[in-house]
Length: 459
Image (tube, rainbow, N blue to C red; front, side, top):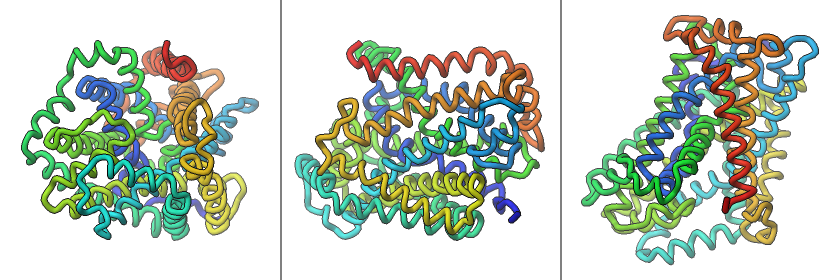
């Protein structure tokens, strides 16, 4: 059997894992969710839940991956006890990764399309918000344009993955992450120097109790919990695969903390780009998903060098989205190679076809198939709900139960031994009551409330 591939460096692991986490969840979804759910109070709860929910679940994914040295589709089969059915979660995880790609590639394509628009100068001279709304609507209404950019995203990602783990995925991700970090700092510094930026910072970072009363504390808390799972791509094995490529020379808690810090830095800094700029130009930060495509282009139009800033911003957005697509596709390739013993080349060809074909409904959901509205929204909204509100938290709950159940699961002792192998920060044994009894209940509550809020939105 061909030896399993491995990452070439610890930095490669950190950048690749962070690249999977850093994406649309940070730089598209995070700012508009912050805008809609109370600004500073949401950010406060989000940071709390990253530590008490995201961090332990992330270490569990990494521990299962590193101990099994396999992808989610076969990891449980190596670690579970004879007769147990934990390996069914492997199918859940693989399906979750596919559904994520079926809409994520389209949104990544939107970012690439806007990068091309700014680079070519076609966005210059536009000063009305209505004109930007029309540009975005026209793009979504054109299946050839959105389909083409979706296809480019899938093709580029597959080509990167086809070069191999070290020569393709790791090497390209290092470059993308390096450029991304430089771009986000440059953009944030520029926004913070704009006149009136302080008001945007106040909304973004200072909790406002009036916002809590208007929105409702429970809604803010639940959305912050969901965001903490979505931003780290927890629950479907997207992180587990990178744990399987890790040597045992460093503890997993320390490495998980580094990834969360990098992920959080990008999320928080993306807000430092958007909210001061919006405040400076007096535009609405509560415009939801359209914030990036309607509101920010109007902000750029008022800046000196608008074409340059717009180009840099959407280059940053494209890299952020592409880093996640590459990481998730690598996970899917690993699943296929583990389960079916395919070569990397065959896995690339098959997954290129699957992802391209099943991404088409999301593309058509805004034009030719716009009359198809599952659960009252677009196809993208439905797929996003399946992943963000169901598959991620349910998958996270399964990871937790597997790692804390002694009789029927892997057991806390095995989990703790794996997490603490190597040099670095150790996971304390006193955390056992929390991860065994409290954490599963919190995640279960998130799942129930998420389903209830979708089925009974006015309740």
